[in-house]
Image (spheres, rainbow, N blue to C red):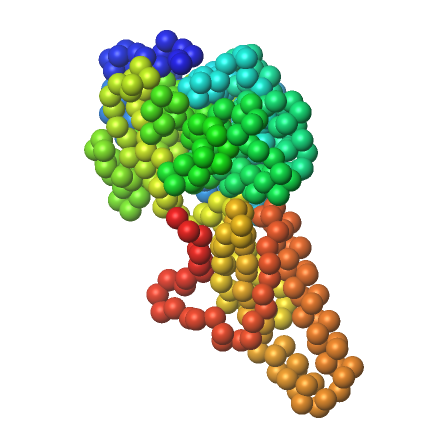
Length: 447
Ligand code: DLL
């Protein structure tokens, strides 16, 4: 099912619309945003130089760091009083990456989310159990807007609360689940334990994303729940969920809402634009955003683009499911985590050294983080001396010190990244040193 006529535009109609919109956007940004104006002046690009879509390549690339450097609002182009909603996502250190949307931006968001839900075959007859988190994260509210737009019934239950999720699933007769795939796997485990037969429920569709997942995981989820599972992609900097989505007819590749977000694929090393079909880093230029329009935002997500007409009738460009990232960001249960955030906490603590290893594991259906941290030589020497002396009181004190170090580190890291980690303190020099780039992550999750 298709929500809007624009999704079936011919290539020339789409390109004409995109060109018109990008010219207006460059004009708007140049007139109102000192940061980008300076960049364009440096590059000697004036708004009138954008004559074809290829000229988008002349615009500067933007990174998460650029947004963070302008924290919190310096990159906003609309006046503060026109911003009606704020969201934020994790940056590489403590400060989040902030985005602001105007009323018109929210209209865009509703539109693209309406397309995504409709694409997954959802109608006003459905009841959507919306498990994405409500809050600064864009998942919950984005799906909420889309549900209202298409007239479906939305249950804003948000994340977690497994037992209550199961109760509402049965009692309200939810027909759609919107969630991270990893949480759905967990929900299924808990449901099975509680004796729920998922195939007897009214569930029929899942709209899943916010983290990488595989074709194998899709099949498992479809089998376990007796549903069709469609992928949905997005990022806060661009709009949140709804940037691209899979149609239920094909379930293979995501349609990009390219009349709002212009995609390019670049080589992450050279930043050269790559031809159609080649894998590289996805970059978006917003075509209508007002709050914080962005030129050529580097998503760091690796994918490839293909043009053509889909069996669902859409002609919008398709991106392959995201296959990786060109930076070290980890996504744990839908939460974006940078190793550098964890490092900044470790570096502030006494008694532990900057040698650490982050281990990502899958326990049951859920991903978990364990951080191995070396205690310092001094700390170890004192503990060893106390043991040799055999002074029980001192030894007990050392044990208490280890426990409180662990607890404090755990709490500080949770405060920083928003999820719990297990801390494992290890002796000095026990974590392998590498000669080149330090290897800080051991990802033990099966693919
Ligand atoms: O995750 C928005 C979202 C919410 C998308 C709900 C889908 C559903 P951020 O927190 O800003 O926004 O994280 C964006 O998450 O750059 C990708 O690396 C990753 N990501 C999002 N969707 C997918 C997906 C939301 N379907 C970052 N597959 C992005 C793989 C995804 N990775």
